[in-house]
Amino acid sequence: MGEISIKITIADRVYPLKVNMEEEEIVRRAAKMINERIKDYQENYAVRDKQDLLSMSVLHYATAALRVENKVQHQDIAVAGKVEELDNLLNGFFSK
Image 1: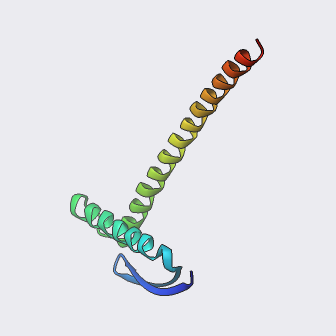
Image 2 (image 1 turned 135 degrees about the vertical axis):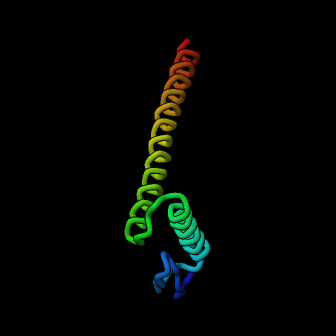
């Protein structure tokens, strides 16, 4: 699919972007999540500087992404162990 031009507002600043049509909704949702996180930090902490709010939001989402990545890696290791276990069982069964 083709690219489209959109405008995204984050922390009261407008950013013109070109995105693939199928990614537009994801980009808009991401911007909405960032703005909601900024609003949450503004309301619950004594932080008013937009740069600080953006930095805190980026840290929040980067940490979440790394947690998910770590969880996936651990699941991959567990799956590999199960596959090896099944392979050993099958090899033992067929070698008889």
